[in-house]
Length: 399
Image (cartoon, rainbow, N blue to C red; front, top):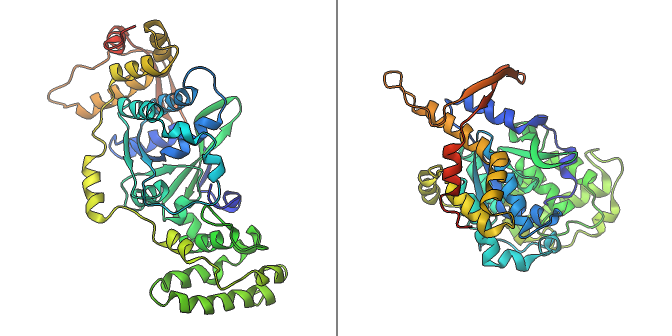
């Protein structure tokens, strides 16, 4: 999604880092505050439908499995859905329409929403593009990072993006590459420079300038073409674009700044008075996002949901073929209960008062201990009584 192959040339802040480690170290540094991650819900649904699965509602089950894995980490998730006020996308439209009918079915979306809610995660609908709203939350510090493989997050001014690293024989999100706007800025990949690359190379909104490849666009990024567009986003834009086009023609035809290996006269011939498209410029520089009052209101409502084990089990009974009492207990013991216990321990520690010690939600028996990761954090293997977990899981299960 976004500009094709652009990820390959962007500098990383860190490579192949365990997401568990990122969340753990953040939580310990920030007084036991979980690591807040924003996710484009449609992008997750798209990956779910393109991953082979078997059984009833296999896409929903894959979504469920991903949530289970993240539940066992010290993260708080915010899923954002696309809103109504978004530009028409020209690229990737075919990919997203592979099973567009299913996405529009209430049963499917209700299943996804039921999982999000029962796990205690958050969700909302953006005014327009989900990536733009997530970037707004990132830029204002409402979330710590965006988990996405869509480069457009940085075009909308995101600060930190985590990109999942594929692991052999695993579809779970275990390792991520970390990208930071500070590192990108230092390398000349500012928001304005990235938008300039998207205009030339093509992105979600159009196909770009014919004859202009990624290398050419990236090499010209530091000449200020994107910055000058931003400074002239007003009533004089149409007049300024004539001048902008001439400067671009000169650079491509003569290689005046010596940024290219050779002139690109083929691309020059394709610069018409309709390039770049005004609607595309506006889509990148002025996306539909929340106004400041809406953002403040939403912030006060977020991060208040609690995990509801019995509701999660009931959703599994409704949507999954294994949703019997026996099947739910088998799945939950492996996928759900570890995260439930982990988060309960965190909540116990947060509520701990030296003068009034609390009774732990789950009494833990330490079986083994080892040090974890470069920070040398102690890591315990524990035994947990499951009686209360079983009763809570089956409370609303009928079958």
